[in-house]
Amino acid sequence: MTYVDELANEYKDIMSKYLFDQKQDEALEMCHTFSDKVIQIDTSPEEIVTLHMDLLDDLRVTDGDKIRQSLHIVQEVLIAFGFTYRDYKAMLAKIEVHDKELDVASSLQETMLKTTIPVLDGLEIGAISVPASKVSGDYFNIINHRNNLLSFGVADVIGKGIPAAIAMSMIKFSMDFQGATKNPSEGLKSLNRVVERNVNQNMFITMFYGLYNIETDTLHFSSAGHEPGLIYRNDTNEFEEIDAKGIVLGVTDSAEYEQRQVKLHKDDMLIVCTDGVTELRKHDDTFIDLDDIKDMIVDTKEHHPQDIVQYVYESLTRMQHTQKKDDLTLFILKNTGE
Image (cartoon, rainbow, N blue to C red; front, side, top):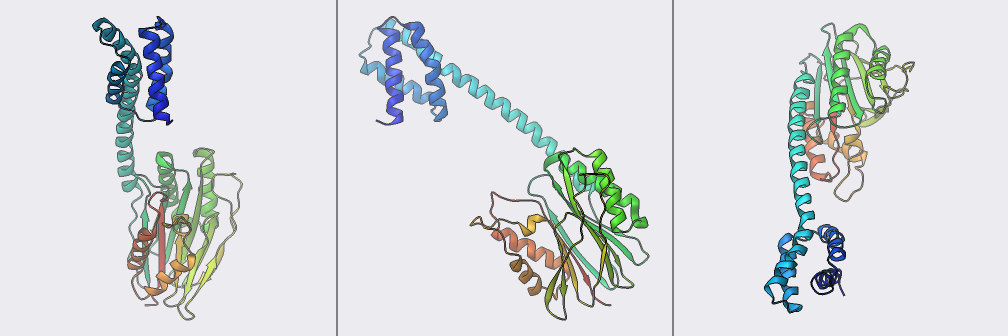
């Protein structure tokens, strides 16, 4: 006997108690349990009415008064459907309001976090940042100081939704405000104090902070628990991993950040990304191989970095698991030596 057959027999028992055994109160109480069971298996009200009519025939109920009495059973069962439908409509209304709020937050975030990629002699920059939903927990910022110095940051909030968007806006404004007055290690220390004092204690931020000297082709960098960066060496066609010690932003206001430096030679590239790239889930639910990403970069190394990041993004999108998306940000800086 199937579960549906068992439910049909249960309803038949309810009708028998109500119509023939003079146990109306017990039968109506059984209706509540029956309602919960049929709702859980997505039974429609129409199916309940059809079952009721079939059981009237099966029980040989032909008397008009008995049929009218039996309608109390249908009414009692369908009351729960009414509650469910009203709850469903209320939920839809809340979702609609929430979606509108997200649309506003997304628009504000796009405006506030908008970053202009500068055009510079001897240097090419490409960047792309795509949210997994309407608002992003990823961020990149570029500041051209017009004195042969260029600051940039790539960050990832450990958290989602509107709070993450607010945290990113705070990071951008703080970074813009401090400008060229801070080297990367000091810059992260300042940003860490902002995050620790103003952001929810359960929300942390990873960040790669760089300061590039165009005149000397020297990159100074620090990291707050962020993904290691990569340097592509054009003369050897190999990649180097670069990283610096530092805890994620927001844990303690006394955090210290290591600062390191590296030179970029002609046609060398710096690649910085968020874990939406390095931990991308493929259609078969396995993680992306970093070597695959490196191959994409090598295959397009002769192109402008903006074309490279676009190519990598489109390639990753085709192989990404549609149900396990994450915010994705990729930043490439290339020394053209011109």
